[in-house]
Amino acid sequence: MTDPLAIPLGPERCVWVFAIDLPEDKAEAFARGPLAGALGVDSLDPGQTEYIDADAFTEYGLSRYLIEGQGIAEASLATDTAMLDALRGPLLLVFRPALTQGRLSPEPPLRLIGRYDEIPLPPRIGMAGYDAAADTIPVPVVKRPSDAAMSGRVAMVVLILLAIFVTLFVWGAG
Image 1 (spheres, one colour):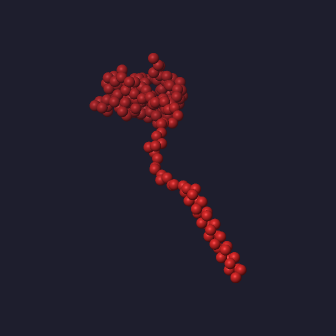
Image 2: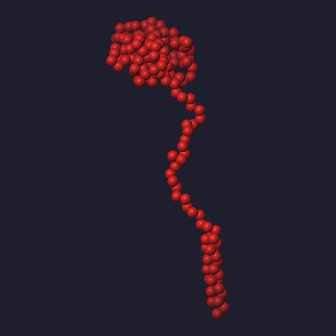
């Protein structure tokens, strides 16, 4: 089993759910303040954290919000669905892009509920398949003139030039 406080390497997306053990008004102020120290990390992107009130999800369900709203894999939440839906009070969601590498070391008033992984993307190897036939515009085929037609045109030009030459020769002799 992986350490739920370990920060995974790479671009994989996951979310850590923390309960904030403070009254709601103080919890919101705490969540809006600097969180790096409380999480035990050197730096934190506050744009990749979210303060939520679990009481707002009583009908919808926190687990459903994480699946549908945050793209978390249903299999990742399977064992904790009932526990997540039963949570009440202020929560802090911390997303993977907020952190560098290492390990989280949360301090009170933060209490780890769990780490949940995003639905994995299929591996991208090369480019996706492409059907060129489905993406072509039919172009009318222009028939190339035959060799016989070309020879006839050349002969006609030669005869016209010869007629002009003979006419000039007869006119000049006369």
